[in-house]
Length: 358
Image (tube, rainbow, N blue to C red; front, side):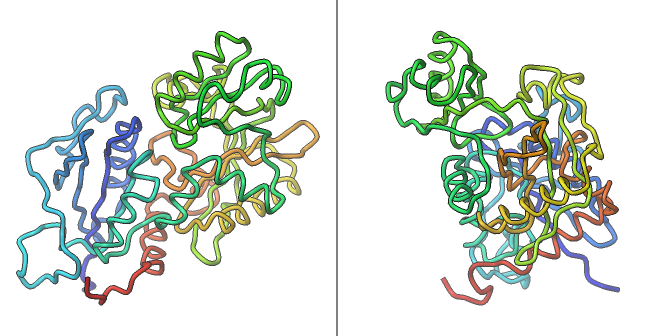
């Protein structure tokens, strides 16, 4: 009988996406094949403390994104590099074969946690330090994509609110604007603005979340999403999805709080040639930004079938309504099979050799 692989499933974190991460992790652990895997649950609280669990009693209020949390009874000791399983340490984390971080947002998705996992010398699911850092910064991502000719929305990057007046923003970018923190996810801190007063408030909110802020033209196209999987030879799911928000835009509330916040359309009704072009562009963007493992890549599709790449998400959600696993399932790869693939490709992208002394 093949020895089971021990998965260290990391969730929570210090960002505003803490609760979403917990729900994603709950769904992942439920779908992992226990004939193949042992699962160690690792929760990071909002203050950065690490805690361990082993079963579904680890979670509390998992059906409510506003109340979900985890039990903090067993603190975790972080492992040293290259500890073996022969009793050199009582550290439970040293028993992990593959880490599976599903920590959305700052310090979980931006390369910080990935750097720590590199120092552990263990494989981990998802983008490495480099790709995570690139894609977390919307400004850096857009500059790389623009350099390679991939269409993006027009925008201005600000480091101070006074750098761009509302009047100048409208003249540059149009009557309706989006204001976004450069390095946040799940639409946290994002505002759609049409007036000077709304613009000032949006800048205040965005700069409270990040020291870099984007002011971006509003695109009125359809919101199309594409799932990509792999490392050096990535592939896009054959089926695309569409988000039809019931609100002004696909906000955090629309995504996770309001059950009627949006319709998820799978498959999206798109011309086959356009679908092929979007999928090819998604794979190209994945490679340009040094992604590995997985990414959900979001587009706007215009009435004339031209499209604009909006964002790249290196740790997409795995909640009940998340597009990333839904698109793979619609393309013929079940949820458990998708997790198997993600774990398998994680072994091929350690930055440092596993036998290196540090």
